[in-house]
Length: 486
Ligand SMILES: *Cc1c(COP(=O)(O)O)cnc(C)c1O
Image (cartoon, rainbow, N blue to C red; front, side, top):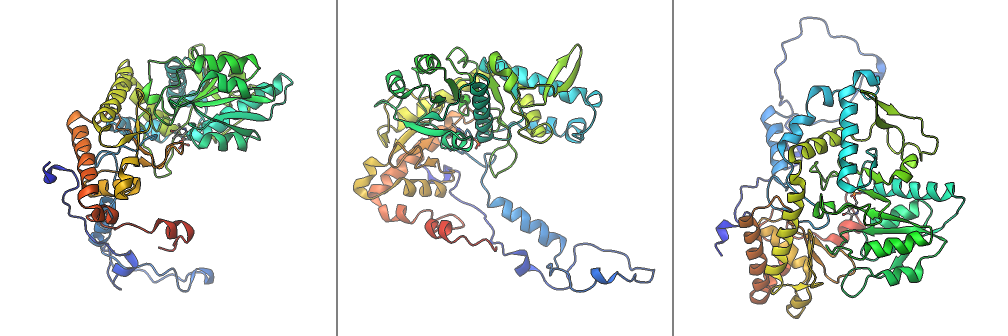
């Protein structure tokens, strides 16, 4: 393989000190005319030494931030195969639409009649998400996937309370996302772990053995965190419903099944989606996201308020819902994110289904082409991601971490590693539908090359990354004694 063809083979990454180290007294970023009025006397409280800001020229500041931005890696830089995160490319038209002044600058307290278009957008987004999932009633308030889960658990609790039934437990399979047990516990439920079967998916009998009338329901991540579809979901839902429980579908992995699976027909009662994964809104860095929650018609009355509703030919925010779990976010949720997702859905239309098919095809292709190179965790048809382990590299004392770090040298963001926990030394690859075959082939060739290096030059791998700006960090020290002072 020609090394110069890998995205990370060369670079012009500049060193950059802190602004405080860079500043020189007297330097200035702008020219202000000499004052022709007497200096004002500041009130006492405003006099004295201010913070010691560095003096910098305009080009100093521009280069500083531009260089820092070049240290960053994003999906606009290269392939980002971070399993479970769906780091797909976000079309720029979504940003253009979100920047429309009537949408971007609308004050959240404007009266409904002044923001009819914005309310219509929220209403239609709810309708679209309802149609895509098969669960017709939707709130777009929650700000993240985990926030959607919490909202879902509040709905579970409200539902059981309305039936005069107090339930204390919730079933969480070992292939669920880690936020599931946390969200359930925040809501006061005791998470009961359930083991998946030998082939990485749940079987209905295991659920039947633990489901009882003290249990509020189950939270199923589907496709699960092994990238496998829970094919027994309908039987599982029957078992749970028969004991009066509800089924929560963690839909953060919807990118594998858009327009293909009807969650309601699978027996799911409540499901959140991650707009910042599947619906192509910016993702990561702790920025705003959105985790809308879709529910059956029966559970609609418990959804958070307010929601955008259609009233004749007008749109309004509906607050009058006495059974609602209440507000889970200020104002309208992260409206700017909703606009981007709306734009994505409108531009994609029925091609959403094709996007899912390509996402699955890309992952299946990687699985097939790498299964002789890395040990496949479960040799099952995969959905949007595939999970390997470092079992075959153990004889060379090379770990998942070494492989991930070496990928940085070749210009790839490492995949998700050591997750899901059910696979020892997991390497979880999610290419998404937005990578072309040539780029996927190049990634596969790079992984093969690294695995070859693990035999020929294991020391190199243990020291990787060697070409990046920073070498391997002491992650234990970083976690135990974080240096937060800059
Ligand atoms: C990402 C993810 C979540 C959590 O979503 P956040 O927006 O990060 O809170 C939950 N479940 C699954 C399966 C996920 O992949």
